Image (cartoon, rainbow, N blue to C red; front, side, top):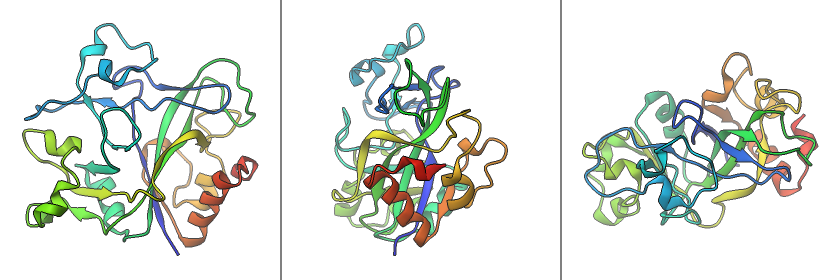
Amino acid sequence: MPRAVAINVAANTNQPGVRGPIFPDGRFEYLPIPESEPTARSVPTYADLDTTVELPSGAGELPVHLDPEFAEYPCCERYTYGDPFGVKARPLLSLTAGDYVFFYATLSTAGEPKREWIAPEWGTYIIGQFRLARDPISGAEFAELPAETRATFENNAHLKREEFDAKVLVAGREDGSELYETAVPLSSPEAGVTANRIVTQLSSDSGKGPWWRRPMKFGDDETEELLAVRHDDAFERCF
């Protein structure tokens, strides 16, 4: 039975000053954060992503930190993710091959919602998942791995930085990994700041304070229920 960790990713009102949108039917746009560190290799800009988001003035030419990497997204090749912070690395390193990583983001509500679970103004939503192809890799062990294994992460943003800084790297297998078309809500329909039962009853998080920034852990049964919510389009089970 798989377990899971959910990780906060993507653009927000701090970086680069705007969130990705969630549209009235529940579709959304994944918008990565800007790259904050010097890079040794070329990285995409927001203009390369062909985004519909109205970015702050001049932001179109900013390089992006395209992480997580979803194979179906522009400028991506595989399903990979790296993180330099222990608060995210520690729960991810507790997973094993076959477990899941869910990626969630804060999204701004665009237009009048047609789906009753979309929060007003903004909310927090799961936007994609990885089914782990292998055990997570710590940054310390990465350099000692065979070249074939390291090549899996060649297009990951942390390997393009002048200084490799990832404390963890994970790779998703092709079956079971994807960038969603329709987001899965973690906020209540009433307010983005209010967590729904996916957070408060299924995850390790209390749903108090800025829960939308923290990693969340899910046990075996809870992971299966979360997967079923999306597979069965049973979003009422989120509340």
